[in-house]
Amino acid sequence: MDPEHISQDLKAVLLTEEEIQSKILELAAAVERDYDGMELLLVGVLKGAVMVMADFARALTRHAEMDWVAYSSYGSGTRSSGVVRILKDLDTDITGRNVLIVEDIIDTGLTLSWLVANLRSRGAASVEICTLLRKPEAAKMAVSVKYVGFDIPDEFVVGYGLDHAERYRNLRCVGTLAPHVYSD
Ligand code: XMP
Ligand code: MG
Image 1 (cartoon, rainbow, N blue to C red):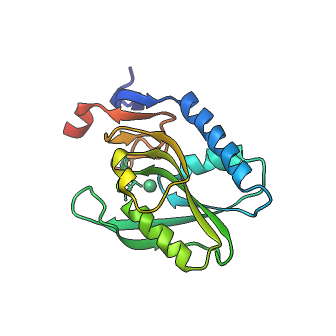
Image 2 (cartoon, rainbow, N blue to C red):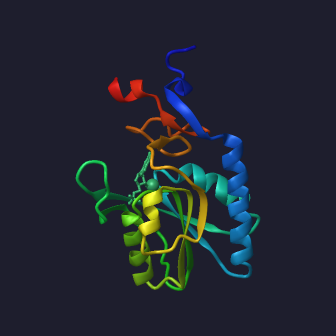
Image 3 (cartoon, rainbow, N blue to C red):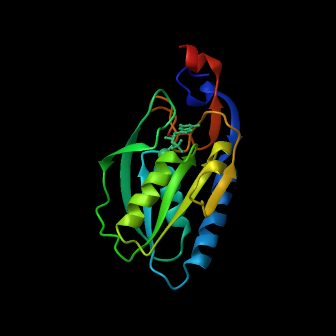
């Protein structure tokens, strides 16, 4: 195989493209039911949620505006601390709006808890969360997550927007990385 081939770096595929796409359709159907007759603003969290947003928004048959935020969390090492720096804020005034945050993955949920509180403080009519993936620790989160695609084990995953050192976001599946990737 071509040594540059991206799938050579995977240890295992956790979720196939088909599994992801059928879950996205389910999530979109649930959101259409729940927001029937209401306006809706989707807020994607850059960069990881780009793929989820692209597929989820197109799975909706109703109008939905889109906006984006980007933030970095200060923390020691790889764990987030919940202390957040905004890199890109919303372009939209969300006063009175129904906001649905679109996320790729929730791990500790610390950064997302901060984001929910921040958006509520700006006068949004409602703020809910839709995430494709959720790790076990997120169960301890104070804010409830209304829409969850898959509960996954506490392993580092890549693909479908999720990266390791900015690579693997363009994989169509979600998987774990082979040990050689970490030792290279
Ligand atoms: P918290 O802990 O605040 O952070 O919920 C969620 C963010 O942590 C990153 N994250 C991952 N990124 N594979 C990734 O590529 C993973 O398995 C993983 N777990 C957590 C991600 O940036 C997410 O938004
Ligand atoms: Mg993310």
